[in-house]
Image (tube, rainbow, N blue to C red; front, top):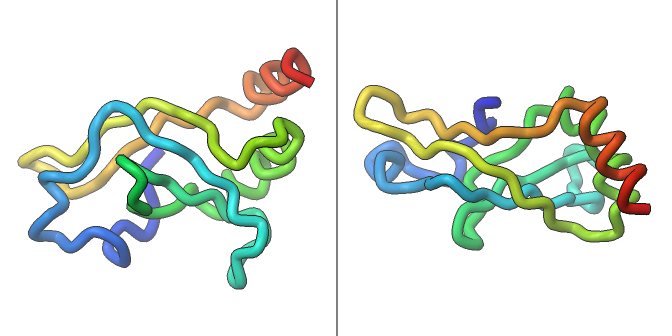
Length: 102
């Protein structure tokens, strides 16, 4: 899925140099705009957010894990695009993973 809000965290001039294959999804339950917010971090820096719709489904499941961070893979920007992408689990797969962990 495309990382949302990257323009707020990564200037266009730097976008080509940001991102890689490993990202962290971090829950932000105290976020003033969305209690389900899930930030996307790369090398400890916020680069954007999971979409609000996806975060609404994922947040309760991530909260059950008891950790604020969830590591995922992704793809940084490349020369023909300034978008950052992360691989987020499908909700049924995440439900199964959580059930196996708790």
